[in-house]
Structures are given as structure tokens and as C-alpha cells.
Image (cartoon, rainbow, N blue to C red):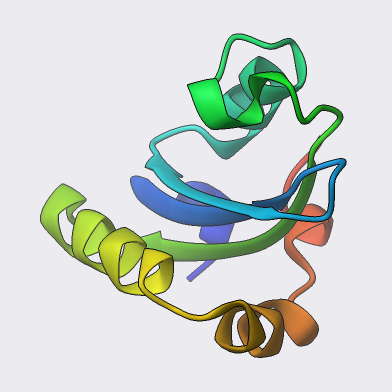
Length: 94
């Protein structure tokens, strides 16, 4: 399954201050543009530009939200391991 075609996505951004932000969306490209424009989450508004570093596709909103919560509970080291081998930008036109 191509990640760009799944209805729901969990994504991880690296902010300009080298922190991570995790969210879920139905349109990854639009959401990253919103974060970069300062129209995304309050957390990312002062931390632009952001870089998309990890994306996971899901078939249901509840599955995506559960995974988002799970990743948000990870330690920084666990998040770094998660995104280490990810090539998120290759699947999206950002």
C-alpha cells in the first residue's frame, strides 16, 4: 500500500529547535504546509521551518489516533530510533 493513498496518516516532524512533533491527518502535504506557515499546531508555530521525517498509513481514524498517542508517549531516544530509517519525504510532494 502506498502511504500517500491511505486515508489517515500519523506523521512526525523535526522542528527547527530539533524537537519532534507528532500528529495525524488525512492530508500530509497540506498539514506540513500549514505547520510551516505558522497555521498548524500551537507547538510548531514558533519552531518553523519543520521537516517531515516519518509517516505511517492507517485505514481508520481511530487506529491513527491510537498510534499518534503511542508515539507521543515515546522517549526522545525511542522517537529517534523510529525515525532513523524513515524516508517520509520520498512519498510526499513537500
